Image (cartoon, rainbow, N blue to C red; front, side, top):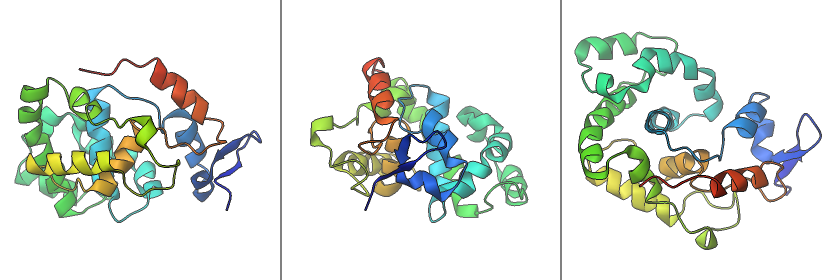
Length: 202
């Protein structure tokens, strides 16, 4: 079974891009490139929470709606959400109206304060779990890796919700902690170059 497919330009891309036309742009311009911005990292953790049990296509299509509904994923504002905001979100047809996931995002925003006090930034915390590339399995061959399990367990100890190892691994793939572009994918080398030029947050 091939792990790549031809992209719009004829160059090979990761096979999962064939699931939806809009995946090519996301794959080429976002997925797998290192991110050190706390807001983007927090947003992605929140979106992965909402993806649980659903397809990424559903979340990607609603991403701008999520950003508007959750104040641009400003955790300092989300942490102050109460019943009024929860009810507003439950009535917002532009997002996934799942009470447990909405409340998990609010809970996780509230947990950010302690994490930042200890680590200085979400980026420093997240990148401390970056695995050694030599320890990784063949790209796109694993549903989870030990580093994602370790981060998942640590976040749960900190009181975070909807952060299972599969969710965390998807987050690590997307945010560039793991270069999981398939071998032969035209973007794999680009991701590797970007990681080489990226300063790991501390």
